Amino acid sequence: MQTIRHSEQTLKTALISKSPELVLQYENLDAGEQRLMNEAFQPTSDLFGPITLHSKSDWITSHPESPQDFEQFFNDPYRKIPSPEKCHIYIQSIGSLGNTRIISEEYVRWLSGYCEAFFYGLTVKLLEPVPVSATKCSFRVNDNTQNLQIHAGDILKFLRKKKPRNAFCVVGITMIDLYPRDSWNFVFGQASLTEGVGIFSFARYGSDFYSAHYKGKVKKLQKTSLSDYSVFDNYYVPEITSILLLRSCKTLTHELGHIFGLRHCQWLSCLMQGSNHLEEADRRPLNLCPVCLRKLQSAIGFSIVERYKALVRWIDDESVDIPGETAKHSHEDNVLPKPVEAFKEWREWIIKCLAVLQK
Image 1 (tube, rainbow, N blue to C red):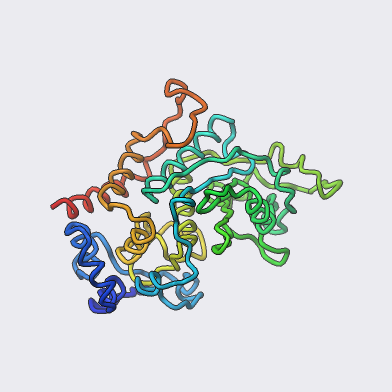
Image 2 (cartoon, rainbow, N blue to C red):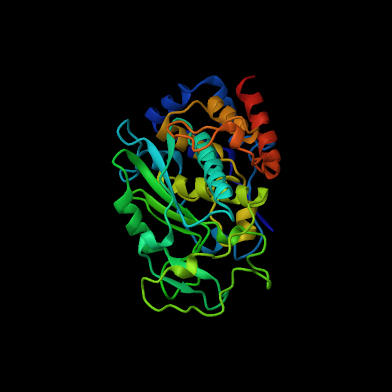
């Protein structure tokens, strides 16, 4: 195992910058916010630790990238910035996300509520769910895993056409595995940052996906025509567990972070680290390091205290309604408890951050 530990000065420059304008911007932050972000370069901090590499197959080793500090992010002329006219994140579910309609609807609502807390200050809206056939995408059975897959690029084309005018971005979510081109085995997700669209699959986050007894295997694809999508009518959907919900929230916020212009983090242990495989993705925390937190705050303009409080409310299941969305059922009908057991450690971490912020 290898630890990537930067010097205090390197982290200070990455977070605060040497630009007088950006230094002044940092000094004008709330005192509590500065106190929390300064934890980035405290060697004894128990909030933000260094990145640890476990093998040569980890992302940083196998995908050399130039690190992005706050100044580079702030001065990037191509990054997308929300505006009063384009301030909504839209979520489009494709196919069923649960083994019943109610579970599918609740799962999407849980994800939407989490995104609205994470990207505090923006509104998350749900588009009407669509079946795979509505996208007119190509599909296949994976030669290795024998599971159904849909073409990610085709889905992006569909989402571009569906993108509302007031959207900052629109993201598709599905429980069907994705592939980007015939020569690739699979992809967790794909996005067009310039056009603000993305598609992400949670199929491989089910506990049984890599099992020899995986129920989603398709022995042979009897496709009579390119438009015969009946094979998706009863495709296998894994049980929505706390771990699957956590992994889904982590993937969705990581990929949305890219649409905001955040590149893969190489400073501290952070949600925005890249990952090559599920084991590495599971090691990533749910939180942003101070460098990436400052980037996101700069893009959206939220209060860090209010953002963390919103995340605690989501974990405590207090935020049931999504602003801007008309509820399809009453609170009495909302009988499915949100499976948040896997988020308890994350909640404890947020409480520690709030203590620093409100000291």
